Image (cartoon, rainbow, N blue to C red; front, side, top):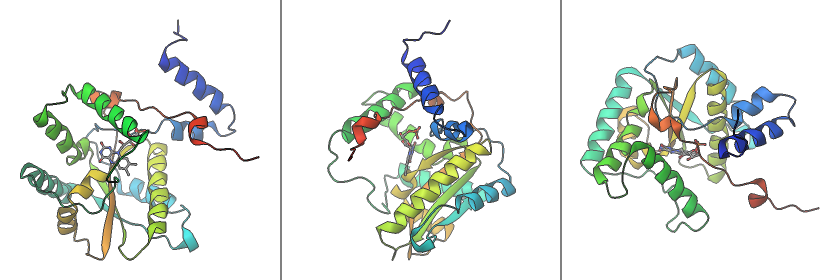
Length: 244
Ligand SMILES: Cc1cc2nc3c(=O)[nH]c(=O)nc-3n(C[C@H](O)[C@H](O)[C@H](O)COP(=O)(O)O)c2cc1C
């Protein structure tokens, strides 16, 4: 029997109610069930599959159709080299921030949301608040692409203004959704931007381009504990202002 009072079943019921509004439920499900996956199988992703995902994603809108995104697709030896070089930089205590993703002061409710997802993930990893080594090990998993066989790096021209970041975000979301449609999962990874100089050097990204984000892509390994994480969302009323 299903426990109709559990948070999980409440989410399920809400999701079913929401899904009933869409004539194309498959799309709704692909969007609603997308999540950041932090444990992948080593199985490779076909070149033709990733090309199809990128071609589909490039249907993203962009101001005046400028399509400001560029993508580096990284596999094999280059991927291993990136892992090695960035991990060594982390262990040497080096950082070379590409840009500031976070504001200097994070205010509520964002602070609490950020803290919750961090604590939930560390609880799954079994890492205590004061376990600096454990935190470093968890951070380093990013730079092994969480075991994924393929990494994507999204860059735009430095001369572009904020608008191009919006366009690139829309493109990235399309990639994440279409990856799911192809049976793959993703984790967007801004953490690579903590080590922008190393990524630039290894991938030969010219200085007039800025690294927006990395992304791990592959087949989910359901056995990896981190993939038990389920994140919350604020209800629509909390972020919506109606004007009638
Ligand atoms: C631009 C961007 C960068 C992110 N960078 C990282 C990252 O470096 N490492 C990581 O584990 N998760 C990263 N995430 C994933 C977020 O933590 C995640 O999207 C958020 O907690 C909501 O969870 P969900 O994606 O599972 O729905 C990033 C997400 C975005 C949108």
